[in-house]
Length: 470
Ligand code: SAH
Ligand code: SF4
Ligand code: F3S
Image (cartoon, rainbow, N blue to C red; front, side, top):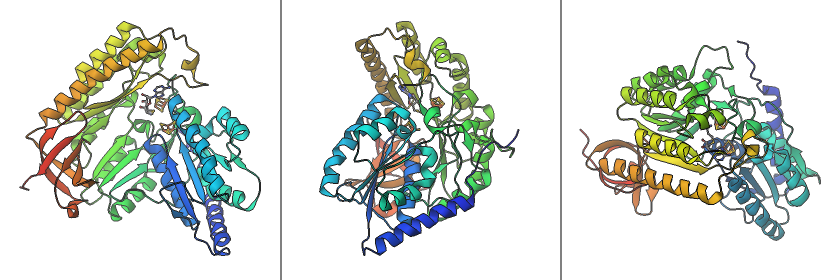
């Protein structure tokens, strides 16, 4: 297979760093330390992108602040996955007119997945004149240049040309959490599920070289990370676009060989290429968390076909059964869509029966939201909204009951947990399966793995006590 992934050259990246230097000079000559606020919507992929945006801002001399009020730069890193997500952004973007009126020098940018849609870009051009710059995910690596042009010129900047996508290595990064690091292993998606906007706004699937990923993992571990979450829309197809002979399972094992006490998580896996090799790799290493987010979307094979998911109910259950057989302690979570166009009552019941069969620890539940430009947006959809809401409530009630049952079965058991922060007076921790536990203890324990005995549970979380180490 040929190497189709295009990588931004180091010369071009150096040019961007020179823009950072020029922005620094711009502020120094005014004797000001500028401030910037980045607001992130959507998934972990966007969280990881925001860390690069903050990196570029910080390299340009900006201090990162926690609110838009009085900030010299505001960046809205947006999500387009459902209509509701977009409405929230437009609402908050509208509110920034007031913030900017109070601080007229403020520069406002919109980026992320919404910026990859032509109709959104047009709407910003026409109706949101206070937005100074828009750039899609493909142009994130050029943010320093965009910011410099906005600061020094009068014109608004739009970097939104559609592209298959590229990879930019070595962008500066300011990580939000030293203990838990996001590491993107690939970008984009080739799956074109019929309801989903992601392939249109994030371009084709492209994998980073395994050496670059390993180097980043080494770096975050030496900076104190105890948990690494590998990110991609479909991590199981990692490496298919490269000739490096390393697939996702191989990559996991390479990272697990790095020295130190840490856990590896990943998301998201697509059931289509969830291989036995992957589950065997997970089972073989104590550093790979026994946690799997495996979205099923629907329990009906007919609906799955209409969604273009490339697996059916049986194949999904086969994968889950194998994974549970080799990892009895596996914690499973998933995504499900209710009310896909044409979903019948019987097909919905099949979704419920799959949930009962698999018994997920928790589920992310969504009502179908038509996304302009995707095939499902124009499919016939006779089911009324009220009926979809009824199905949604029924599904959530079932899942809540299952989550509660699974959580209460944890009581009395002891799990190795990473103590990761505080919530009011309590410490917070995560089990290897990713479940949240609250406990009392010394904040000096933050950043360490500790045995925790579970003493109580709710639908959403657990409470516990520190146990004696053996
Ligand atoms: N790449 C991941 C999912 C990313 S989007 C995967 O394939 O598993 C996260 C979830 O949002 C999806 O799993 C799906 O359940 C939901 N979703 C995506 N598009 C949607 C839409 N148009 N309406 C409702 N839910 C949607
Ligand atoms: Fe969207 Fe499907 Fe790609 Fe996931 S795999 S990002 S649901 S198109
Ligand atoms: Fe949203 Fe883009 Fe993630 S659409 S869910 S932020 S990939």
